[in-house]
Image (cartoon, rainbow, N blue to C red; front, side, top):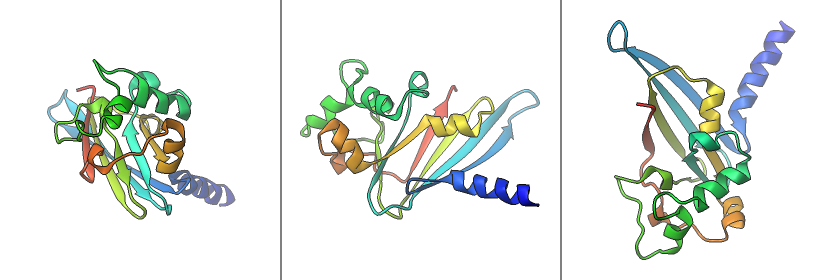
Length: 166
């Protein structure tokens, strides 16, 4: 009984990390006898008193340190641009519905929620999902990149559909 209680405590504690609560649900849809799709709902609730920022990390960056992930997301070129350049060119860049995904960035206000819906062809682990999604306090990010994040540069909706490997 003691081991079950400790296991349950560790399970619930793993969902609460530095002012955020992450809840993951999954379901498998069988489209036919041989074709299935897996749908994951990854919900982030900001339990802190400061804003959080979140984005999806590229596969080749998943196991880097948090600081390296931030540097790659903001300073690595994607085509002709990088996110840092777009954010500092405040007159021209506005997040749109048809957003170029390497520039995805969402702010979660205190007590706010954000939902990632991830659809893929194969089953993926909880740890994989948690390494794929990065969240950071906005003030910590500002200390690393040294520029403000304007609302017009952020993803405007409360849900993001991400097709992974499809």
